[in-house]
Length: 211
Ligand code: ADP
Ligand code: ZN
Image (cartoon, rainbow, N blue to C red):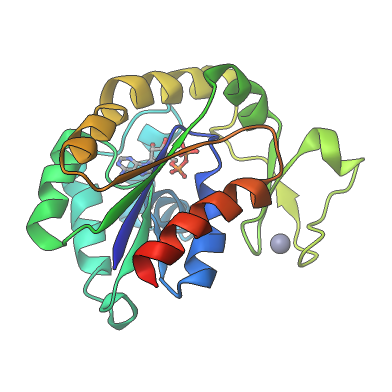
């Protein structure tokens, strides 16, 4: 079973992805995480990706599609995977159709007015990727789950967030229609409620699909 997780930056994709991937034993494939790992390791892909990510723009399709196409050939993905952050435009969706069969698209809708504060206040664990909001940390600088150091993503600043949200509206949102027409979209609404609330809703629907 191949599942796509769709939603604006800050909608809670990453958090839900971790939970979905654990419950259904699907490898979590996040193009954003792959790019950040490449940036950290100073690879050629990382160097290229950084120039786009820092501006809140999409990394070129050719590079992004090649990474995902390769990742899907790994042993752990042979029975399915959870794609988080890919595809992000219609071109990528059409490419993906050439190398994978998509069974379901979990789409998280969210009120845009929540996103600027969520993203700019976000702190992420360097070790396990868990995200937090500064307002709930009470000054803590390490992850309550694993003790890892928390950091702020370089693209979580007002200017870059603004362009990421524009890119989402212009390029990614049309995917909702694309997958709705195909009859495989599952719609959910994100909110300020704890992530577990949304996850319970998603799991109730996926349990029926996956069994
Ligand atoms: P978010 O959904 O919060 O923006 P991601 O970690 O998914 O975070 O993505 C961070 C950045 O990585 C994006 O703003 C973009 O520059 C790049 N990126 C991630 N996935 C893709 C993709 N499928 N195509 C092009 N660029 C991507
Ligand atoms: Zn952690």
